[in-house]
Length: 252
Image (cartoon, rainbow, N blue to C red; front, top):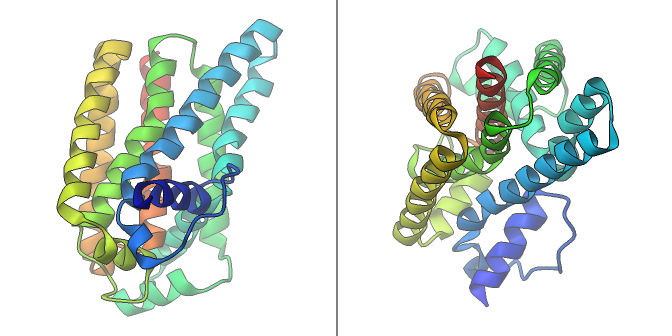
């Protein structure tokens, strides 16, 4: 029952996909991060289906790219983009760590957040316009799952900017950490193998792009914030997805 509740909590928190009401007791938080990547599985599957259906229906490249750009925001409810925008505002600040953490909590949207979101959407739209059906598309769709697997690992393993009072701290404390980390590590290996099978050398490019963003995320979060927060975890998900998408668009 705990596994089912963890699955339902992961989907109810990180997507707008309708699921039965979960039991939100603390013991149900044990494996939430294990099921978080499967939100990306659904997202990638829907992106693939939309792309194939769009080509069958003869939709224009621009309309199809617009749909594929909007799709992740619709499925996630914008929760990760919210973290991305908050983090862009905080990184643009010249303040110290405490100031940056305060900006993350601020409900107001700053100019750098708006510009960052606009640039993100433009780049995503352009990449989808350039991406042709084939191996690159398969890798781009896999990116939704890869980004969430790495984000889940960061929540469990990276230093936290706050010792208490945040979702990432709560999930890290409540998780069966060793089992969850092992599961996500094995899932990441499986995803890497699948990328190579589906994408060939493009799968390797996808893995390199994701690893590069993950390494930078670790360094940046420690240097700028003293660790990660929920907003930073969302920022990483968005940035990793975009990096993979751009890499696939560039390599064809």
